[in-house]
Length: 168
Image 1 (cartoon, rainbow, N blue to C red):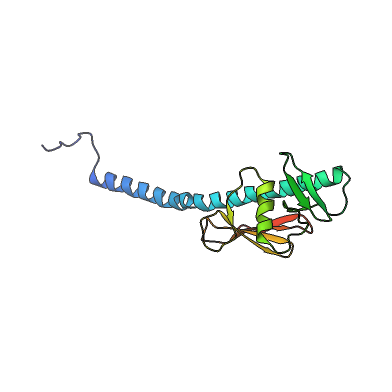
Image 2: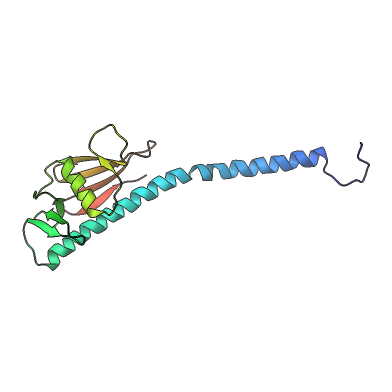
């Protein structure tokens, strides 16, 4: 059946123009939607870094509030668990050690003590944990593994209590 002149409906030109407008809008919006993954990774690392920094500050505050000096074993935390601190009152282990001493396992102990339900960690290169833990002297480096496009790290320096890192 043929449409008669003046009958309601769209011409072919109007339909093509409508499709073109929708395609242009989709092309403009797509890059923003694709960036949500990067934003989520960045937010995850920022949140974890802030949690560690708050935990380190809490330990050092307890150390000072109790009038402690020098290295201390078994500074009791809020949950009743103990953490060991260095001469400045910053956390270094949970097993009777008062230095990190380049030991990644001690960095893992600190990580697990400072946070409730922390992201998973591992010291091995291969694996599926959220973060890989390495240590050098009194510095713990936690490298985020869930985003392979860039390297995101959280770095804890036990001699100063500074929690920093790279999160591009």
